[in-house]
Amino acid sequence: MSERQFAAFAAKHEGQIPFDTSPRHLAGPGDARHVTHGLAAAGWSPTSDALSPEIGLQSTDRRIAVHLDPQSPTSAWWRVWAENTDNEAGWYAEFGELVPAEILSRFTDALIAPPPAQGADPFEVLVTAGWVLDSATAARSADGMCHVTQRHDPVDAQTSSWHIEVCTPGHGTPMGPRIWHAWFARNTPEHLVHTFIDALADLAPLQRGMYDRTSHHSVVQRPSPLTPAQVVAAHVTRLNTIRKQASATRQRQRGAPATAAAKASTAPPGARRSSR
Image (cartoon, rainbow, N blue to C red; front, side, top):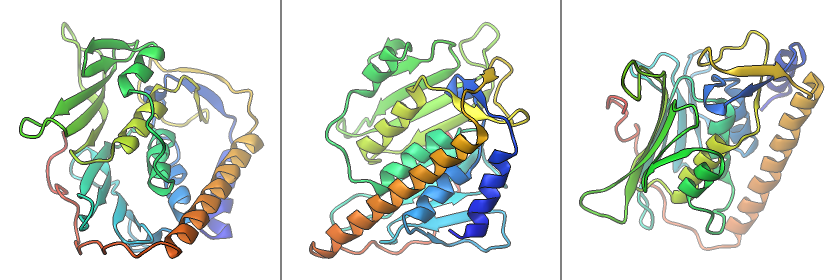
């Protein structure tokens, strides 16, 4: 990431007054550079044409790719996929246009950091944050607009996919038109899904500028105690942490036996599939 690219981020955020915006799932997309700057700081390589509106980034081992397509013919603007290796199954995840970048960046940051020890059950995390448990595998936010569902594979009960939908309130039905979605296909590592849900359930507000796009009129915004300079400084601190993590990971890998190379592929599984 160049100084010019960071300067553009700083200029945007230093030039606007931040507002605490909640709930998180209605905060709007925010700045996509929360995702792309983090991956660049970890050493991921751009794979997209510099003059294209699309952005593609690939991990240093070339196994994982992140793709943003603001002209997507489906509601899936963000796609993340990992190739099969001799030791690990491939997986795929997608996210809608209005997914908050800060929530998505927690997921992409987890692609860089070592997997953590076993964490709390995602539904316990949601209930602790005030969500309503509809069943053992489904929960909804307190405002009834965000729904998290785990769907076990009918053939292999040990695997499951996860579906998250944010919808406007329906007329006589629980769910109206969809605002944004996230879908994690089977084999997506559990810690990645759990990280996304943890970020979704976090009660801390997200910062948005006065004229930033939000997802719904019911969102609540109040002047933030953070200054614009503090918002930018937090971004710098996060990028520095990612660089250190990535450097430590590369050092560990140099001292470990080489892993099997990922099988070549030019498109994510289900890239032409309609969104779920």
